[in-house]
Amino acid sequence: MANHLHINDLPPGLTFGDIVAIDSEAMGLHPHRDRLCLVQMSRGDGDCHMVHFPPPGDYSAPNLRAMLADPSVLKLFHFARFDLAVIEHYLGVTCAPVYCTKIASKLVRTFTDRHGLKDLCRDLVGVDISKQQQSSDWGAEELTPEQQAYAASDVLHLHGIKEILDQRLAREGRAELAQACFDFLPHRARLDLAGWDEVDIFHH
Image 1 (cartoon, one colour):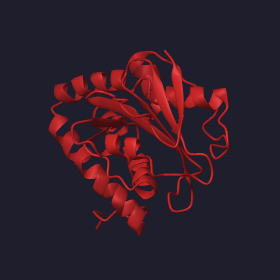
Image 2 (image 1 turned 135 degrees about the vertical axis):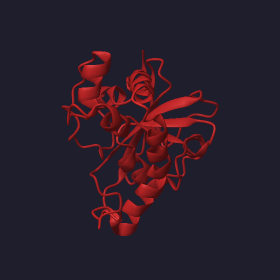
Image 3 (image 1 turned 60 degrees about the horizontal axis):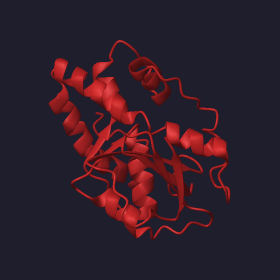
Image 4 (image 1 turned 180 degrees about the vertical axis):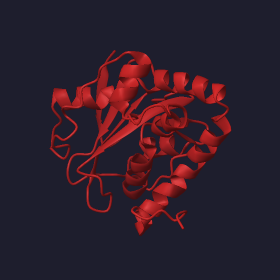
């Protein structure tokens, strides 16, 4: 297991297989205001590759953008809605196809309202991750080892979580419904970017 930090882009030739777990860190939760600082990825083998965008941020990143846009690679997120929006805003890429463990959890773990990544790691794969660095300064010129470890923990367990959630979606007959939700996520992200982030357009 190792963390690999790259600046502004992935190295040429690096691949992640058919399913890549992805997360991002930004200065806040408003893509139009808060700069994208980091994108972290794992193929599920215990290694994490992080692309850091030091200020002011060079988002040309041709290798990263090509991987994110590759239709043959499933992009695996937890709370994909935010990551898709901030990635599209800064990198100009629509990620598809996608899978969101938060949505999958809400569809099958209806006995609880605890669907955070920390909860899923603990309840499904028996791993207790720390969220201590969540509110740290991701816009710094250099990331601390603690920040890098935190960022890696957000993607290293998503493959295992997905496997369990897939079993439960199939068991409860909700796999097709989940897929429809996943397919809509890039559109939901674009609605957020266009100003409908606080409006439920399906509400009466």
